[in-house]
Every structure is written in structure tokens, then in C-alpha cells.
Length: 70
Image 1 (cartoon, one colour):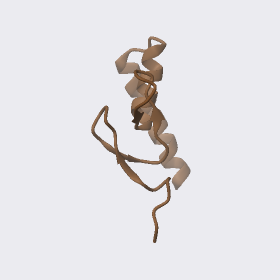
Image 2 (cartoon, helix red, strand yellow):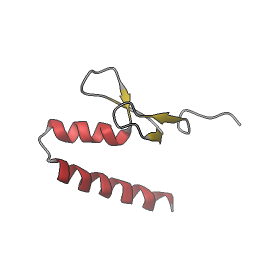
Image 3 (cartoon, helix red, strand yellow):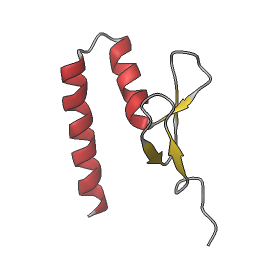
């Protein structure tokens, strides 16, 4: 079975973790494709959200996504 774009596993150049699905475009250089979590972190950082709050937001996103897959 051929892998589709949404199931292709990639490694994020920013955090080094593997991910699948659509990548995010880094705000740092507007060229690098990064994982959705790093993309969210960069977006939240750009509006001044503190790191501790960013992690809470990402946790909420992950929990809601797990709920959708059930």
C-alpha cells in the first residue's frame, strides 16, 4: 500500500521529533517545514504567549484531537 501525504512520517528539523500529517511553514525563515506543534509554538510565541501557557494550549489541542479519533 502506498503512503499518502497525510500518513507520511517526517522528522521536524526544529524539535527532532517524528510527526505525520501536514507540516507547518516556519515563521523563522519562511522556508522550513516543521511539525504542527512547533508551528503552533512559533505562532503563539509571535504574539507573546509564555512558554508555560504554550504547553497548556498544546496539551488542550492534543486532548481534543484524541477525542475526535475515538
